[in-house]
Image (tube, rainbow, N blue to C red):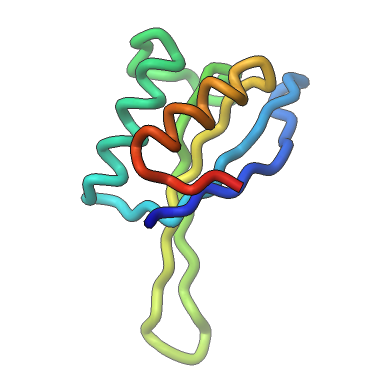
Length: 97
């Protein structure tokens, strides 16, 4: 079961929550996250930089001692949308902590 871990994070002065998931690019999990982001941002697809609308971020980390590369997809939402985002993540099969 995929996991989403919540952590408070402020962007451009707006208090929000970043749900870091173990979702990978090109998977069904990414599609679910895109659908959630679209619903929470009321259909806005092209987001400006430093947006305070719900948005996805992709993070990749490579290990120094080998070819391993790890990536995660996170969803940031303003605090007032935290419970809505958590419900949608759970509906998509994520365990939210």
